[in-house]
Image (cartoon, rainbow, N blue to C red):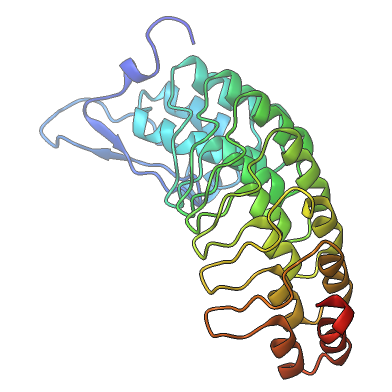
Length: 293
């Protein structure tokens, strides 16, 4: 933008009423006593919703109705639409690239959610906060992992994304990946020094989640890296949860790696007791074999 900046040309006698969902805007007179000539109306509301944000900004610029509040909202709108040129224009005008919507999502998070690597890179170069969190405590890296956007995740890590960031349940990206069976993400996060011993709000570590949900490949990845007898807030370890859920192969793996068979939880129950209670006969036999005691 040449000459006077967009923000400096904002009219004192006009204000923008913006709708985030429809990208609508209209001018409202702020001073009825001014006897100036009425300016041409903006594009009608029923036509604006289908227009790219760039076109709306051009119209606003011509009518001198552009202001910072509108631009902040529309950097999010432009990010959702993947409008690179609009974002570039807003960045040149020093717009806040860390603006967040009501859910706490920033333009960088939106770009990541949409797997738009070019836009994510543009925002990072413009000093977007790589560790900004939404209302659920998720960062762009967590969003990338949940949406299998590995190329963006690697770029975020390059820009110092915190691999041990916690959401509102104190779960890290590693815990989420272990819980949801994403073995490839476990490998990547471990490569970048993710902490395998971080506990979530229920004192569960990634290993317990992997065992409880039956993700054998992840259990194999972590079994020699953690304390396999670690207990959560309920006094349960990976063996007990596996017995409850009936994960026979994981039980065998844990027994092989010297899991404490007779360990009890806060209710005084062992893995064998839970296996019997839930009707898992094979696991009950495995846990009660004299040679395994």
